[in-house]
Length: 283
Image 1: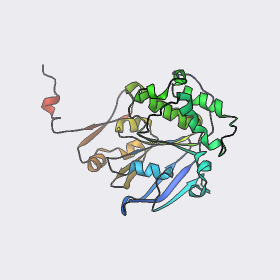
Image 2: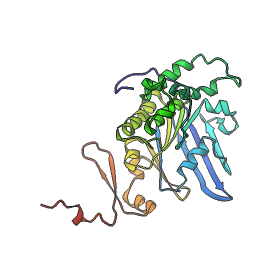
Image 3: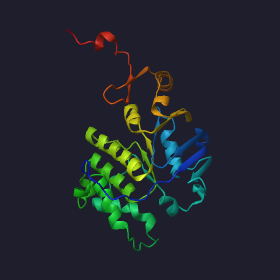
Image 4: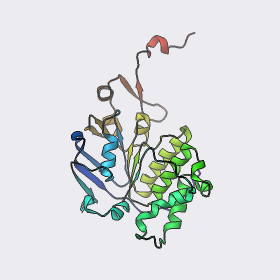
């Protein structure tokens, strides 16, 4: 989709909350009594070091990972764990990292997979399917690739195609696990802009796992910081991304400042070679 181009909206957002989430691998708890609230019109970003449990928590909320214990509620009243798979998939979509490259399929074929919750067990009609797929192709900027074979795409193009499949699913909750993987700087920025558009213009509740703290600060309404499988802090970016807290969680000195041009938080990890002498430009 070109900057400023408008696309007709899909469905409005839903609220998805998770409480008491505990997940174990081989009998060892890796997520401990975690909570997550995804609200319509808000972008919630999960951050933390490798192994902190952020992707596991997101997968559990998407019902791909079986928890040892959890309460999952949709729109304050519906037990989301009791919904059938197709019914749940009409409300919640998940973009995983590291999806395989499909072979023998066009881009449109791949995006059409996102319509599976709306088709019967043996296929059947999907009256809104064509419009939903066209809208998703346009929103992710891959409409011109619709008839190209998916196996001929770059990693960044394929990532956007998989995202289009999630958008074609037309859910009120969208979960993204490291969606900027494989994307160059331009498409990282455009994807995060699209995430904000989905929340701001369509009221979608978006939950995102990101490694880049600056990207998290730029796109998030709220940030959830995890470490050791536990939620350390949750709140506004300026409440969560503090130097002392980040330094403690990541185990490396991290400075935080406000960009005077944008007003956004900027972070900087200080390594052994980041001394004042080495950072000073010789005269």
